[in-house]
Length: 272
Image: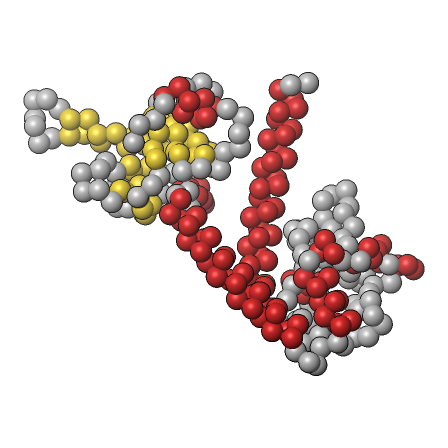
């Protein structure tokens, strides 16, 4: 694979959001000329930046040019036996390919790096896309079967469509975003008189595909979720057949939104 060094170096240091960054110690083997079969192993502390499937490493955090890069395709990331604790390796499928042994500063840092690097390749993204396509297809079939059911009335099926898509929720069912970033699903702020609304059609009966509303144990008396719950669609508002797909979409969407916001803020500071 041929890479344009100038373009790659620019990509490594531009303001585009990185997927993961941090210091790692990189193993370096030095061969002695006087003893052909003897080599010494040492570790150099480097600043690593992961962008997409490219892992850059710099001499220092403030360095403007990367010392090198690892293309994370056709490789596996695994824990390895090493004299240093918290070591892991990037090994390639080719027999003669070089393995990169890296050492993190602690257990949590090591786990975060292994997780990020394992998900960086296009091969992994293809697997995720295929799985999501399969789940979406099954969800659409299940939803179509529910709509064809003769027991469902037009009003209840219409209500389900609203609940499946937060963008189509009635005004009183949309979350009220507070200053601290948490939403107030089920709180009195969205309904007249401050009362909670378990069902806006005046009935507590739920359509068959919808699970019962569940309140967090940490919820307060008004039904507001405790701080720490992400401002996404509540689990009780998602049909069972689309729960897994919706959760994945929500989790990935929150991370992308945060990264995009951070990048936009950096752009504003750099270009007043």
